[in-house]
Every structure is written in structure tokens, then in C-alpha cells.
Amino acid sequence: MARNTFGHLWTITTFGESHGPAIGVIVDGVPAGIDITEAEIQVELDRRKPGQSAVTTPRKESDTVEILSGVFEGKTTGVPVAFLIRNEGQRSTDYLKIKDQYRPGHADFTYTKKYGIRDYRGGGRSSARETAARVAAGALAKKFLAGLGISVRAYTQSVGHIEAQTVDFDEIERNPVRCPDAQKAKDMEALIKEIRATGDSIGGVLEAVVSGCPVGLGEPLYDKLDAMLAYAVMSIGAIKGIEIGLGFGHSTLKASESNDAFYMEGDKVRTKTNYCGGILGGISTGEDIVLRAVIKAPSSITIEQDTVDSNGDDTTIQVHGRHDPCLCPRAVPVLEAMIALTIADAYLLMKAYQG
Image 1 (spheres, rainbow, N blue to C red):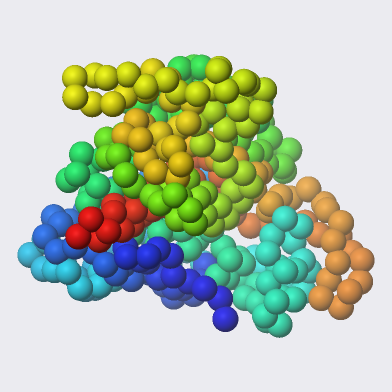
Image 2: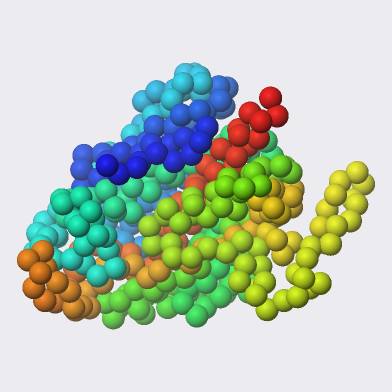
């Protein structure tokens, strides 16, 4: 039996398949009194939906959200909130020719061996289509956090070898790759189009910043805030690595170089640097939480690849259909959603501990 629920106090349970009639999510543990509308949820879903630019999949989905429960007269009521998103642009026939072949880089082989069955239509439950439900839930979490003065912003830090050199948050939604550097955004877009023309795809790095987070989120052992964030981020399909703060950069530094020195700013304890990424001993410091996630190149490409089929025979495969040449642009709101859900959960856990 697959686990479909995430979180401790603020929990989400998603349901549905890529080519089924609908996908959705039930959000439990939501405090009463949060102002929320379908239009606010839709803004986040529109950032993730397919077909939004020349560097994303051409699959057409409106991703129109319906609130089924938990909201009355524009406010959460304290009971589970249910969101439904109907699938509209399925083309299951794209997968008929390869239904008995394992697509390299996908979950086809492992899913079949674990469960003895799989939905071959776009990957079924293991498809990135499921992340639309997470984004809907994350939009609600972001609204809750905004009321606490906490913001979650993510962006494309690099695509292939091209890296952003500046960070202008206002620039992120002005370009199709969601890069905070206007010039590098153009270079990234050109690279993605060039690689797509060859039938291939490309990976990249996403960066996220959580601002306004209070001191005290997370616990010193198994529910460290960085561990919770790593679990959340690594649950996103195609994410293959995460680092917080300086991350792997710590490996080349001495403690005298990487420790964040404390100082007083009025009556508030601050750090002169933020190499720890806003988390010390598993607990938030009050500084910005900064993390980066590596996302691999989308596995569905038209270039011929070696594989095996369900009978155990060697063969080759070409994956046709509508696929992203780079996941970075559409993964940005997914990353924000999972971080927001984690921070909201950690905040409720802290309040429960404090009584």
C-alpha cells in the first residue's frame, strides 16, 4: 500500500492519476479563519500548469480548482479542506505502443516490481501531474504563513551550465524559466529550446528563500527542520539532491570560516553570515532559510534509448507525446508548496509544544 499522506499536524492526502478523471487533495489540521478563495489558489496553479510557454510541455490543462469542503464565506472553518482539479487534456493513446516497455529514468520498472501492476498512462500515480494537488494545498499554506509574516519564494538558479548571477525577486515571474536574472533567463530559454530541438532534455538547480520565519521551528533530533525540509523536497519527483545554506561548500572550510558569528541588533540575536541557511541544531534561527534542490533532466525524450520490456527482453524505446524539455520553470511553485506545507506544519508543532 502506497503512502499518500504528508505532514504531522498540517497534513495533506493527495489522490488521482495523470490520466484519470481528476486529481485532488484533502488538507487537514488547517486552523479556522484563514481568508482563502478559489481565485487565490488558482494563481498558484496557473504557475505550475502545463502549456504555459515554449519551454514547457504543450499538454493543455486549465487546472481549474474546485473547493469542495472546509471553506465557508471565504474563510476556513477548521475542518478538512478538499480541493479537486479535473483532468481535461489526457491523450492516453500516446502510451499504447510503449505500455509494455520500461521507460528509462521513470518509475515503470520499480513500480511494477513493487506492486505487480501499474497504470502505464503517463505514469499514473507516479506522474508529476500529482504535484498540482500539492500546489493547491501549498497555496493555502502560503496564505496561512503570510498572515504570520512568513514568505516562501523560489526560482530557477541554473539550467545546465548557465547560472543566475543576480537575484531580483521581481524578475522571476517576468520570464518563462522563472529566473531572477533577466539576462541569464534569456540564455536559459535559448538553451532549453536548443536541447528540445534535438529530442533531448536538461536539468537544473532551484533555489528557495523563506523569510520572516521565527526562531524555534523544528526539533533537535528526528524532526529537525532541515530534515523535515529535505524529506519534503526529496518527495518531489525528479529532485535528486538538496543542500541547505552553504551545503556542500562546508566541506572545504574550517569552522572559523563557516561558523555564523552572533551579534545583537537591538534586542534581537542575529548572525553576521548565514552559512547555516537559517537552521542550527535542527531549529530555525530567525534568519532566512535558504536551500537549493537539484532537479534532473526530464526522462521522457524522443531520442532512442536501450531498455527492456515486461517479458524481460532487451529492446529500444522512443518516448513520444507531450513532455517538458526542462522541469525547472514548472517545478518552482511545487518547491514553494512543499516548503510552505513543511513550515506551516512545523509552526503548528511549535505552538502545540508551547501550549
